[in-house]
Length: 256
Ligand SMILES: C[S@@+](CC[C@H](N)C(=O)[O-])C[C@H]1O[C@@H](n2cnc3c(N)ncnc32)[C@H](O)[C@@H]1O
Image 1 (spheres, rainbow, N blue to C red):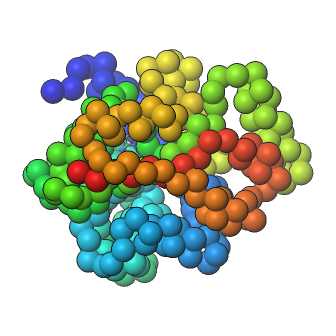
Image 2: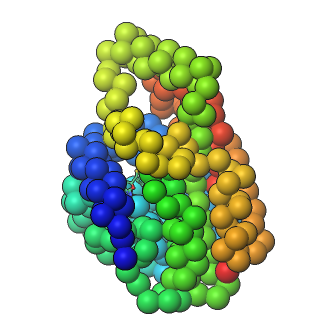
């Protein structure tokens, strides 16, 4: 059972993403901006889980950008999230492209499914915003079938150093001045109070996530730098974003 403090954190998180839902996909690291980027994502995922018809659970699916990509690749996809507005956007997008994806409310830290329900559990940009990331990874193992895979895409964009802070501020300023765009557009903007309650508020470090996977019994843990995806994303990013974009970004996967 969740403590009242955890419930409160998750309500705050859901509220922030409700507010960001309308602009989330406009951000070049969130919504897929080009055919080249789409192809690079597909290429990266095919290398990890080839074939079609896999049962994929996208935890913290947001606006369903990658859930829909998996459906396009021929998989059977379920996406869960705690933000109703992110889910509403995801459902509208699925209807528009007639994709057969099931979206619903659910806590990624404890997915509401029977053991062994999925071939793949996928998460992107989620671990940093969970109060209990280690427990989440454990529970992803529970809903995976034997030999199923967990696939995580994440990064560290703020290690709390002066250098990171300066780069972030410079990027935001450039976006504002050169592009005349709101640099917060597409982001959730957590308060310091909320950040203090998340163990990886600046991003989940690769080494830590590897530890979580190994501790949960995952085998054949492999990492990828997603260089081609990042390159394709950069081509469509405003200059300010490109400045900020120089941080650890990775895909890590493991087999149950
Ligand atoms: C940065 S967005 C990433 C969305 C999507 N995975 C993507 O990469 O496009 C983080 C998402 O995680 C969701 N989220 C945060 N905590 C969650 C939780 N405990 N359970 C389910 N979803 C959660 C938020 O509502 C938000 O939609």
